[in-house]
Length: 247
Image 1 (cartoon, helix red, strand yellow):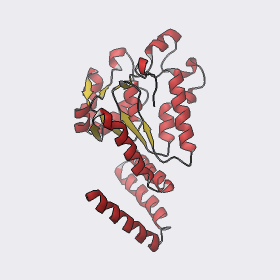
Image 2 (cartoon, one colour):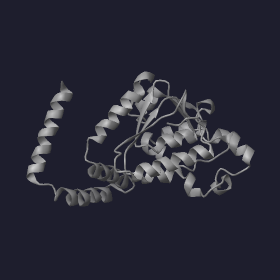
Image 3 (spheres, one colour):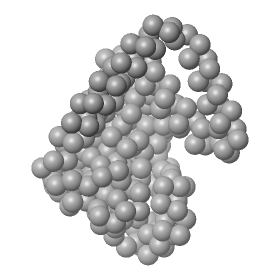
Image 4 (cartoon, rainbow, N blue to C red):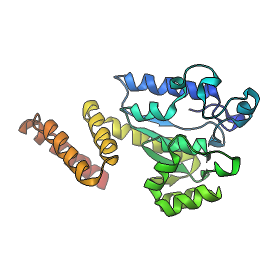
């Protein structure tokens, strides 16, 4: 959990370093299957701590001046390398850098109190953590340009309608819903969970014909090792779960 509620979980150098450290450790862990990321208080994150940046006099694009090496602050790289699914539980404001942090997650759930905004243009900055490319791939270039070129806020209901978030729930239901989803993901075999996430991510970066070829190659490599008995056992388990969910 991002835990600077008085500062609306603004991404200070220290917090960014802690996030990278936590995600790196999670990536290497064998006893973790899914992660839920949320913010304390009324914001997910208000973005980079501009007050800290102004006081320290460093360029937002030159991380080394903030102390430590750039790698220890590279959240985008850390999230991209994480083999486990990360569920972003967006509880309130997700603004600019906080919006970019949300887009580093694999799945987004939102509270009815959530609001998204890309205010880079309003504060005289350019995105460097992936927002300009990821957002348009999720909601389309026209809608992405509307948000980024105006700095307007996007409410949770519209975010769901546009496909930015998977679903919107009441504030008190957000964490239970996110944890339930994480638990359901964790029921998948760990090695297979990694493979499924990777083929979606890696394929999404390729043109469709190449992505389809990648799926066939990886799918055949995995499926050839599955025995008929194991496949039948899994089929029965899936059918039982389907009947339970239908009820």
